[in-house]
Length: 439
Ligand code: NAP
Ligand code: HSE
Image 1 (tube, helix red, strand yellow):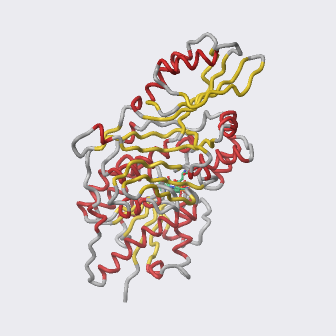
Image 2 (cartoon, protein in one colour; image 1 turned 90 degrees about the vertical axis):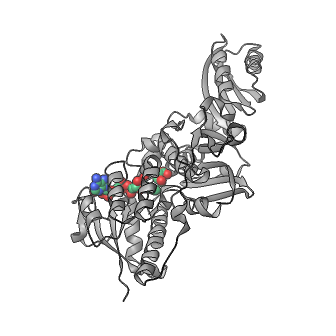
Image 3 (cartoon, protein in one colour; image 1 turned 30 degrees about the horizontal axis):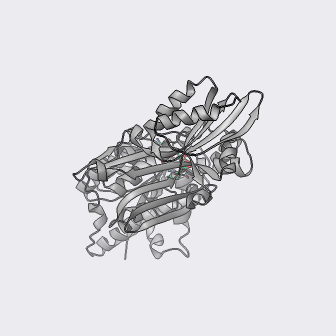
């Protein structure tokens, strides 16, 4: 008779509970689900009531007990944070146990070390839930798009911030109130500053870029700006001009002109950006995420779906569990399986571009004195720095001054920074109130 595959679950919070709920109800799902058994669970607080039916005797507050348990064959890490999560993953790998993890913070920083250890031990590390919640994106980017020369990955890859921006735009709800809602719905990280300051999206674009461009990414060098300082005024003005504002994570391959060897030269960034309303990413609302990949020869392909929350994330975690369990069951039956994904990590050097060299269109909002010639002075300084302007309009004026909105054509970030430094010194300019990139 076939033995069930023993799972050790690290964490029984939003994601862990979602996973346990699926594994507890195999009826109507893939037949493999019934072959999986949660044998041990780690939590931090043994007294906290749990929202899932679990035999209390398998719960411990020592996660190392779970990893070391001989009945645990696959470790599912759903606790989050860097430590002890990283050490537990490394211990499981060294003990010959495969890992399924939703922890993008660990994968973005230690992915290379983890992949090398897993290759050496011959175990799997599957991370579908780490990016895009329920959207299948890791396997497609790693495997299905493998024949492409990837040029650009543009993602709305943080559910919390997309939920906040959507509610602020469509319902006019206050930032703090929507953030609280996102936390209650289980979308936000335990420290929500990871979401609103853009760090969670930076972890995810590091992971996607590593897979898309075939090399480890220096996570800490990704220029990152979140939404916490965004003013609703800019959302309103952007809308008037035909744009939506979204937190975008962008990775662009600048290699062709920069390197002659196989190294990749990449421009990565996370920042609130204006998206024209006709662009496919502009309609991605609420907790949904989307990842637009541009490659040769595929052209454009977009992946869309729920980017956070218990059900969608557990859907991705359980899919990974089924992959590993399926292979283990084949091995139990003496069948040989060769999975080409294990060898997908043939790393090359990936260099991150100096942020000043990154090309981008820009939205700039200036508060100026309402005097004749101010638009001309601003235009001159952009011209002096070779910044070509797509549109410049005065949208509002009152006793305290006028608001001027400038949309530029694509220029290097350095050109725009230099222009804004000079514009800020103009006597008519009271403040550079906002500056975002645009698609
Ligand atoms: P969560 O609700 O805070 O759950 C974390 C769980 O881990 C809790 O059960 C907690 O125990 C347990 N835990 C934390 N530290 C522990 C320790 N040192 N020892 C033992 N148990 C410990 O977090 P979550 O939202 O499920 O997220 C888990 C992971 O999935 C994170 O890496 C997150 O980034 C990732 N993720 C989350 C989502 C989402 O939508 N929430 C989506 C994709 C990926 P207690 O319950 O006793 O506190
Ligand atoms: N906090 C994350 C988000 C969870 O809001 O996208 C999904 O990774």
